[in-house]
Length: 196
Image 1 (cartoon, rainbow, N blue to C red):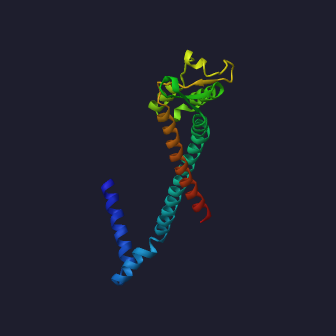
Image 2 (image 1 turned 45 degrees about the vertical axis):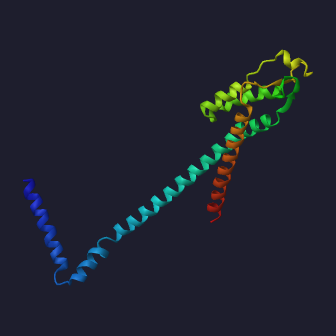
């Protein structure tokens, strides 16, 4: 029964098509096939392409905006404060110990660095996070007594001499500059596309 219905439908469609194209030239037949029967299809295709392009542009702009926000958060909460505090660590040479250079930093700044590292240290890769923890772990020693700093809350303490201060500070400085350049590039592109 199903085969009979399919045969009847095929013969009906063929007969209708032949009636519409009987006596028409090949050019008329192509014109009818392309323009009269598929105008709505062409409109649908054009609208679909436009919507896909719009969605693509919107998604790309959203990704750029999210990346710019992430970079801004990293800079304002981790890299800029650490850069300022570590960059402000006072360098002091101890001539009696063979010109050993120590870095002195206020206890309040060390506490602030620990707070920053605890709250936003996830922005650092694991190796740098561990290096910063090692750098910030310090001990007062007998050698610090002659420096003349009292043991109150604002006294200066020595950063861990075993840790590589220059490596940690250099990493923070380099990453900060890299993120600042990327942020400028992203926000510059957004401004240009917004004004166009």
